[in-house]
Length: 277
Image 1: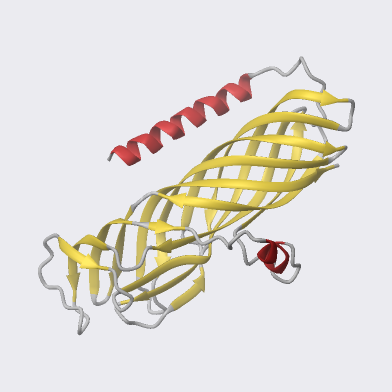
Image 2: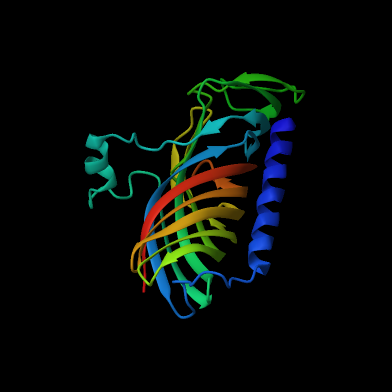
């Protein structure tokens, strides 16, 4: 409860900060982000996830796992991996990545469409509380009362690794802090967004066949804050933190109509390079 409470406080703080940015009038510093400009960027992320309750339902099971832990799976950052995956045109989509295209509807105010490719991996072999029933041979559970279950590989593999994908519309408000002519500057920004979750969930439940299908599984809402540096004319680097809530009420767990639903909070830390024009 405390973990969720701290996350909710963080979300409130970021929302208030974003609201303050949207109401702030930029006057002191010349801006390089003017109405009518477009921008695009590409970069990478790391993510963290809150614990979540996951409800599984099918013809022979109806049960809930409580407080399931998960992590991301970003590629290791090393000189070899940077050239092998991060900067390799044939492997650009292997690491957790982000792209976005935006348009400035007013000076220092943009709207954008983008894709956040994260990876959600259930921590294997953890022991969690369980309630509900299972009628599948070898996994029978007839008493629905709350008990404990070890999440071994024969009981459950559960990942959104191809991935935990968010397609979202976002808005951003920039506050320029410093500029050097029309070539370089530094600005902070805040934003809000919402979008659909389109994972390719890798799930193997109760030793059944692995399911691995693209599917719209729910939606997410986000708030974000960050800093952007214009490196030379339109080229920029941006670092931001994004906080979100995911509601996945339609996760496919088999090709027979079995499904799961869960909701959780997530943090995403993103570094990108882009260009404004």
